[in-house]
Image (cartoon, rainbow, N blue to C red; front, side, top):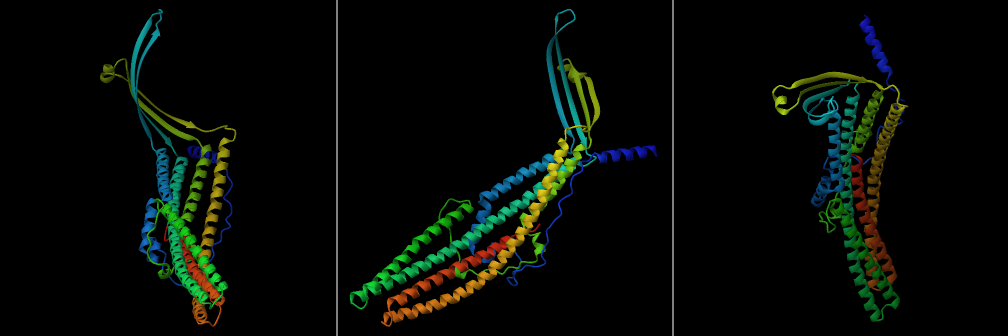
Length: 456
């Protein structure tokens, strides 16, 4: 009974050595029951989600980016570092074994003032092991393991971002290609209108004003072509950099007008917490901060260490090998801090602050994920509505242009009427192409917001 009372008193005393820290902050995170925006029924998000666009050129470009992009390769290299950190932490839980060999040759002064040369050879094996009855080293190992897991999720988030940026850039490139094709076709139409205005002016059927108006409209359209060519070259260069290649041309696949946006099933907001790698990274970082805080609190507890050595001593090598003097030692130590001017308590407070910041970072990551998804859902829905109206406007302005051109050619109206119809038709077709590209890119943003098919 006395022994049990003594053990209980020691346990209570050691438990009292732990540094009290403030509890974690109260969470203010609320998961909504459903999304505000809806895009209709669709298929679940797959890991290789970009294949849903059914464009082989896009597939090749994303695959190259995931293989050669510098950010992805940097994230993979960082994983090697954190994997090694886990090994370092685990090594602290295992015994250490070392071997030493110490030959010594010395000259000392004897009792009669004469020099005496001595030779000694000593070899020894030493072993040491730190007991972990309070779990401090285990907490450090767990913190390292969770840091590594957080970096794994961060690497997945980097890969998702690179894939999404590549897909979005490619769709923007196809949109620019379509706009350039429209501009060149419109320029050819403006050339025909200019030739007609010149012929009518030469025969005296129209005035120089109409000829000047036709030429001005032709020049305005001609200026659009190099502007789009410059934007295409810049987008190609940006895609090449993403794909880890030198700037140059980018292969094309399906045309913009034949690209159909895939149907996506967003699921529930609660499912998003397991489908976003950045949320997983923040969650694991929070768990790692908790483990680090536990290790910091245990710094005030005693550390227990066992040591042992086995060696041999002789005055020369043959004696060391044949009949040495055997040496051994076994010992242990208990070390507990008594006074450190508040250093350990301050370290625990630092760890608590890091834990609190990890909580806030996790909540921010979740809220940002909710906002990204809501914005993407709204963009897909509203851009689809805009595109529907833009297509209807494009058809209407094309019909207006056809009628205005026939009226002008047959002399029923002035060129100003056709000029206005040309401008409206070009603007409507260009706006429809821009909206289609933006609508497709909104689907990429939705894939990105939903985690790209990644699951913990």
